[in-house]
Image 1 (cartoon, rainbow, N blue to C red):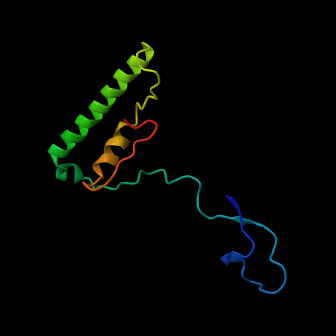
Image 2: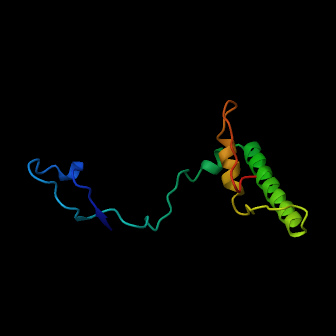
Image 3: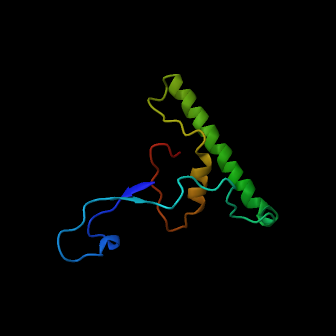
Length: 114
């Protein structure tokens, strides 16, 4: 990947006298795509250590979000709801974001957050 360096940046401090060097391409050694092997955050025995009650609550919230989305979409198609942006496929993101909140945190839903 070619990146342009800004004159006067920390990589261009070779000459302090005279005008700064012109912008020039730099070859970035980092690859554009990640490794083909998946990156594992949990060990293979992590599923056994997860709380089954928590997993049930999370799944319940996923189903509730999908059901709400389906009902709002149906009402929009019937003309009984003016506008509803579908959030199908984003339920896990919403549930995970809410799970990370603490009692003192605020939540400001956005365009597709139900």
